[in-house]
Length: 411
Image (cartoon, rainbow, N blue to C red; front, side, top):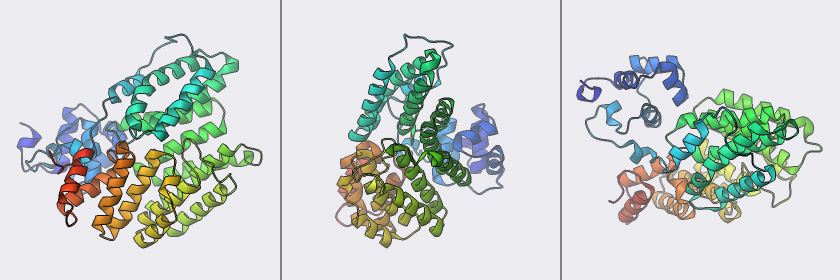
């Protein structure tokens, strides 16, 4: 007897059945989806209402379920991949590199100078390639192994530098694993990025790791923890800023922008714009063409952040006015530019301007296909556009959905 063959089972009962069949405890499942064991119990026993689609997808990923109807019980096959984005072909190789635990150095340690060049080149690939996820998937396994092996074998006088570099590799890896059906890896790389920065006793590298962790906490709804961590990182950097290089100011501004986003997610208008204004003050102390490598913090990207804040606060008109002040071509990172176009599309969707939303999604896909393919907001908009296509664009919506891999696209 399976949960799927019992039509009267509630969603929570189906979650419990699937969890027990997978041999997974409530604390483990809760950790994988960013919730507590008590939350899982409340869902399973019906004390909490049925989770929304986004959370059901996370639960399905964590339990290895490919057909969402195993949890919903509606009797119709519903591919998790079609709603949430398929896994990436390189994920098994990246996952193996991240989760293997050799007990000692396995290869000859690499030159730190050479590793730093490889890491810089990988960051360039991340920002300049439309297929950035595929390109990173090719580079990361060897880079992770070489950086980890070199840090482990480094002598005392080289260990801090090696750990700083390894933290940077994990910060880069976060951009690969984010939004893939492997939430445990997102937590793993964020934690390691912070830990390696702390082991190097380097406030700047630690803050970069924290910037990564703040986003993980944000996406799992742990907003208070994310804000506390961001504020702690800003305080860690503050004593050094009078004489610090530009990147120290850049990561501080990026943390202020993240804090603004967190408050906007909670509908806190005043706090959101207070942090954004702090970030704006910082960006205007830097050279006009400055861009922080990890976070893309820059004048253009801060303008893009303003669009997102207005969208999160439910002010689409203000979002579109802010968008008019941003030239997307001034955002050199193709993935970040593509994400900005998705945010502008969200503003049009809030105003029910369906033709404009489709046009922005189309432009986003042309800019960086591997951004829109794994962006939950974009996929949700495309699902909605498939249900109610803009006049004259039904075939275009289906074609775009097919390229992105969204349910309803043409076969």
